[in-house]
Image 1 (spheres, helix red, strand yellow):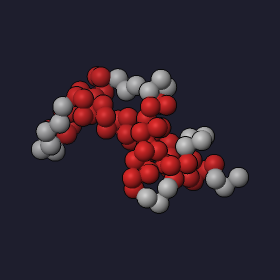
Image 2 (cartoon, helix red, strand yellow):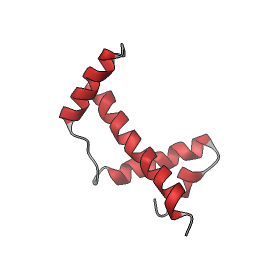
Image 3 (cartoon, rainbow, N blue to C red):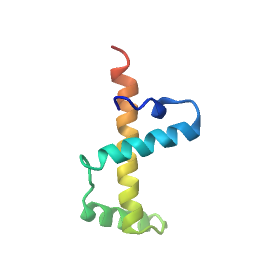
Image 4 (cartoon, rainbow, N blue to C red):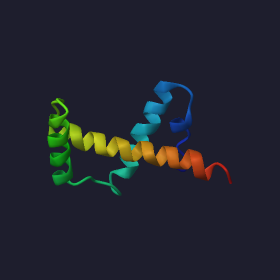
Length: 79
């Protein structure tokens, strides 16, 4: 998060750029396991959604990035 002010922008285009930067930085720290993604695909099929493993992996990476941003907004900026 440090040095990535785009992710906190009010402008959607800038936030997307910030997320891209965050996802690139997280690539070395967080890589979801394929067996979890496969289970997620099955759970989504149970809800009548059709996704593949790559989409499930992208969802897991994205949700981790959103969680990081939200955590930072709630806890770090109060200091």
